[in-house]
Amino acid sequence: MKVSVWDTYVQRKDGNIMHFDILVPNNITDEEIIINFGKLYLKSKPFETGKLTSSECNFCHVEQATDDIVKNIEKLGFHIIEMEHCN
Image (tube, rainbow, N blue to C red; front, side, top):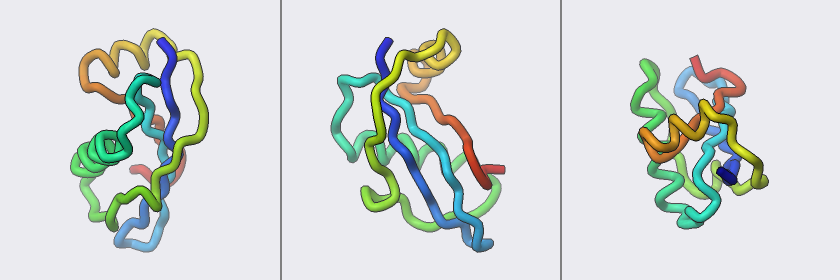
């Protein structure tokens, strides 16, 4: 499966900036859908964050998904790769 990678940076209320990637099937191009996936992910966090808008989330590239990413996308519709200050 080919996936689009959306590079995302969100300000946390404690001052740190979260950096994570939102991966979606590459046929999903509607930014509102992708941002809503990011918001759903942020709700799972035990800390408060700032807003997630198209200013914080930008298309980066397309890549081939691993089996684990495909399974997660089949289950949730998206996959998150946590990079910085996500926990």
